[in-house]
Image (cartoon, rainbow, N blue to C red; front, side):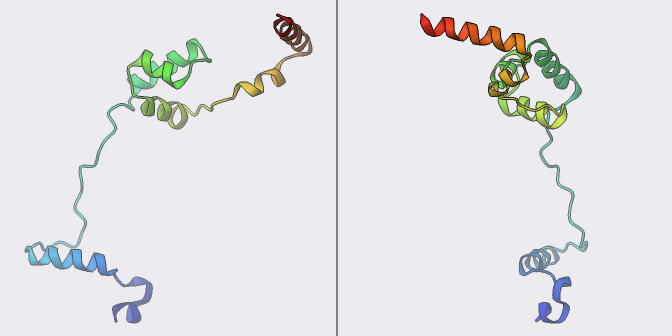
Length: 117
């Protein structure tokens, strides 16, 4: 009946039941209470520096390697790299396309030599 009268402005049944429980418990405020929430302890400037320095030392490092070096979890390293340091993962498939002509020839010669062995 409330939704018929107030359309989109009406409270949902769930929210209505939450408020009823609050008022029965003698709470007078309609505002949501602040929750402590779970703060991220690993995404701070010190850990950003660790991950950044580990990654700059060798760009071929995987997230597993970075995690072992810094002592942070895999998820933390991944989030710091992608969300905080704005870095992207490039696949090794792209490497030959980035090479200049002389490097491509050298790469092919090494490939053929290894293939003959």
